[in-house]
Amino acid sequence: MTSAGFGSPAAPSGRVDQPWGHADDHGTLTPTLVDNPIALGPAGRVHASLDDMARYARFHLRGERGPGRPPLLAPETLRLLHTRRDQEIYGFGWAFVEQPWTHGPAITHAGSNNAWFMSVWIAPARDAALVVATNAGGPVAEAGAREAVAALVTRFF
Image (cartoon, one colour):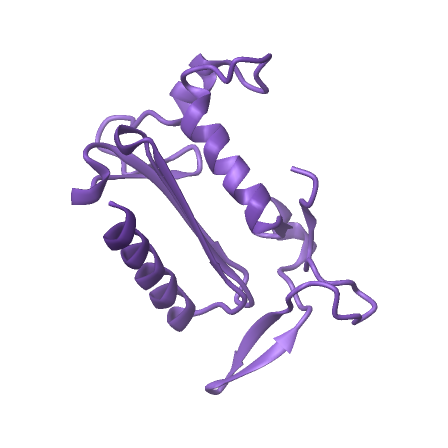
């Protein structure tokens, strides 16, 4: 992942070299470089390109099987990160879910800093991973991301 970093992906100089996030200002989306406070860094200040996020999802999807080269994490470690504990629906950063299209247990994670929203779905039984993102946050962005996942599932599964 070569594009990953902290804070807004756009240049702090205000130069438009990457998509900007958008804040909801009473129903009007306003471009912004604002991000979560630095103290929330581990919980939502990381950015990466869609290509790199797809690589991240593929790493998790394929990782338990061993990627064929020296892995970043051992397959056993990834398996542990992807295993539901008791009846908990969330653990190790992943929500454990089953949907008709997943054909078995799947893991998902979504997050927002109120100017961006991203959702990742990994369905091992389908050998599939989905990544959707918006450059706006809030309930409308979340609903749009759910619609995008539904459209991808309808089209490809």
